[in-house]
Amino acid sequence: MAERQKLLEIRDLKQHFNTGKGNVIKAVDGLTFDIFKGETLGLVGESGCGKSTTGRTIIGLYNATSGEVIFDGENVHGKKSKADRKKFNRKMQMIFQDPYASLNPRMTVADIIAEGIDIHGLAKSKEERMGRVYELLETVGLNREHANRYPHEFSGGQRQRIGIARALAVEPDFIIADEPISALDVSIQAQVVNLMKMLQRERGLTYLFIAHDLSMVKYISDRIGVMYRGHIVELAESDELYRNPIHPYTKALLSAIPQPDPDSERTRVRQIYDPSIHNYAGEEPVLREITPGHFVSCSEAEFAQYKAENKK
Image 1 (cartoon, rainbow, N blue to C red):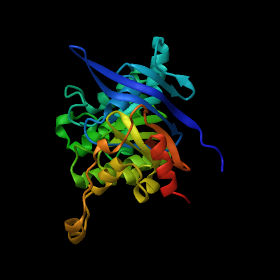
Image 2 (image 1 turned 30 degrees about the vertical axis):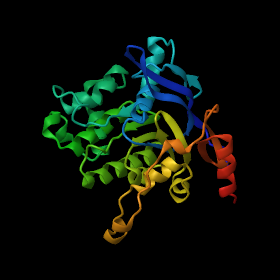
Image 3 (image 1 turned 180 degrees about the horizontal axis):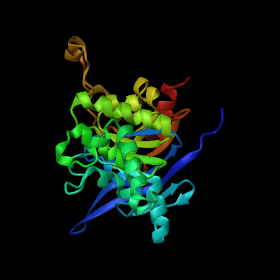
């Protein structure tokens, strides 16, 4: 089996916010993980765990407190020329959570989608520019008649498709999807996720898919990282994580997923995560490989315990 190629490498990434009076919020506190070309890495956790801050820090909307973001072999944070930033911004794009707030209400759909095309000079004429806009609209399931309309004329699902078209306009390699379906009706969520999967196959895209809906994350992701208070506590292939969760927090999250069957839903036992069960006195937990490709944040003692419980 050929070795997978790393597209994104995160090394000890920290994002701390000073709230004044000496108070510091450690929203992201020492993340280290890789994302490989062509895969989808899902990042899940409760609200406030730092997953959206992680995405925004990776793409540069926030300046990292410390750590490295290495994209396609190049460190993208720190001092960069305007040309370097422009080149990076074309390779990496973002789809935002709120399809209502993320589109400028004063711009037509054509101008919203073509904004990146204009910035990067990807069209040589107005005709070519509009041709690319029409093509992108059709790619995301809309039509060319939508080009001259304004965002308020569309539903939430349609607006998110416009946001996806805007991200695709500069032909990126990597897209950070920050809870792209959480503001949409359940009936529309699957349509948007299926669209993203189709685009990934056709264009060879790589995704960081941030969400709190674990069932949908399992559907789209190759691997899943579980975040808790600024740390990744478990990282494994999607099927493996759901089949064999190891960290107590992951078990608690999975136990909260509603069951479609009313009888099993009534009898479902929800687990409550209590962080005090860990004894980390004098030792910081680190991600350790319990089974091949399955990493859990743990102490030395927990590592031995998890290894013994997961002998294969």
